[in-house]
Length: 164
Image 1 (cartoon, rainbow, N blue to C red):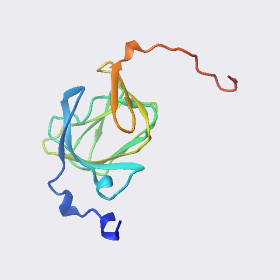
Image 2: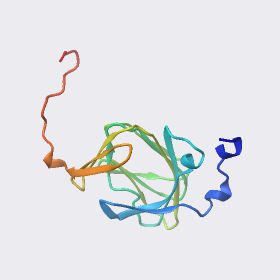
Image 3: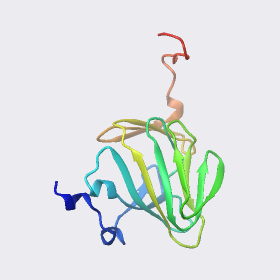
Image 4: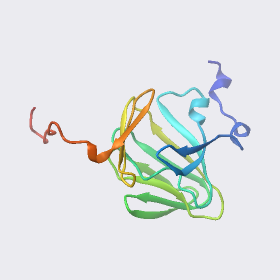
């Protein structure tokens, strides 16, 4: 990889990207530009995301293995953290640690909301979408989903200080 391949220029992302609609809830979507992949990154993801007025980028969800974050560049909206909504605007940053809270970004403004969204890229992850009643498993090459209520505990977890 040559040095210029590590740089993603502003003109390359100005109007680009691909339209994304969530496969489990096509009413949720945004335009995404995978800037980290364009620069050859593999261990973390950074996407330039454009959310149209009135749109929600992704269904409310929580990752159990992956850490995510959002930085608002322009526009206004709200971040949903479980059932609470918090106003977001340019310069605001929000972190989503593994295990919760469930989260989603919504554009409540009159103009497009532009954000950088990122995460570490764990090889596998378990994602729950509580409003959809789904649990999603992400593998390196695919996603699989099933109703949350089809899962049952087959072995109890260990408590702190307890050996297995």
